[in-house]
Amino acid sequence: FIRRFFGRGPVKGDSRLREDSSTSDSPVENAAQAADHERILRARRVQMLRTPADEMGFQSSKEFPRVFGVLMEFEFEGVMHSIVAMWDGNASVYCMPGIALIGGVAHESVREAAIALIKTAEPFEASALPTAKFPYPDPGRISFHLMTTSGVRVLNADFDEVIDGNHQLSVLFQFGNEVFTQMRLVAQKIVSESN
Image (tube, rainbow, N blue to C red; front, side, top):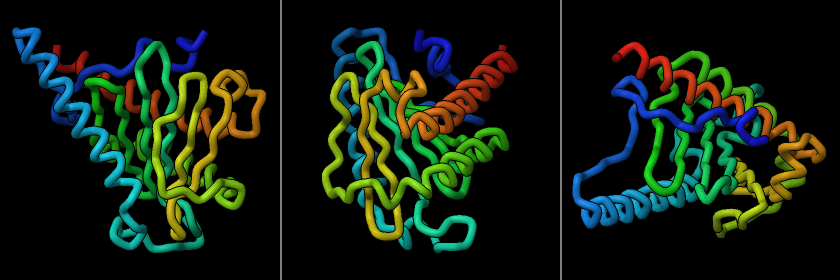
């Protein structure tokens, strides 16, 4: 059911679409590396959400009045998925624990998808609730953190309703999924070119 949206999931890439992930032959080292990696990703997430618009280099414009970033998150098959899109076309995908695809801004299809998500999120800014706390969504829920000129605002909903298209936030999911899809396609292309 969800596979129609997400395909096989994130794919490892090379330096053209960097992946933050490391492995070892030792199960103990792998567990320690996974824990370190997850801790780093969590810290990056909070730092991103706490960074004000001006420190991000964002200036309000006619094209981007208030929303400069979107973080879409949900748990699927025991893995927390975090899809980040920024007004400048930057995008990243984090799957906890262990995989981070960053560097999407270098690819036109990713830039276009990221910018489209930001523009789609703008009308939702007024109905989103201000927040200074950034918990991951509970299982069965999806959250959209909107990074705005007045701080972070959040929208939460039932995951199944949203992906089934039966919720007002379904459109945000569709555009967020497009960011994920474009990141995955770029990563797959890089992998196939390197083989």
